[in-house]
Length: 64
View 1 (spheres, rainbow, N blue to C red):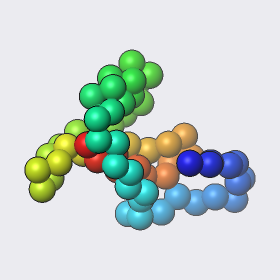
View 2 (view 1 turned 180 degrees about the vertical axis):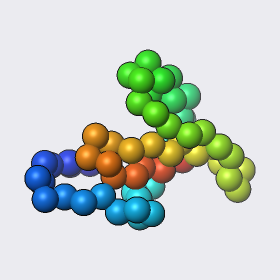
View 3 (view 1 turned 135 degrees about the vertical axis):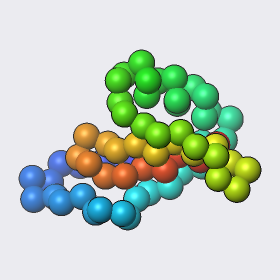
């Protein structure tokens, strides 16, 4: 994933990017917590989800 800086960027209110992080879910959850990055964890359709935002405010759904 490549992210670049755009000073005119306005993050979407609902749109987000979803990535399958199977096998890495717990590692990513720990790293987000250690970095003090706010996230929400939940279960959906037998999958674990992490919902967070990057520094530019873009939404990310990390599925494990």
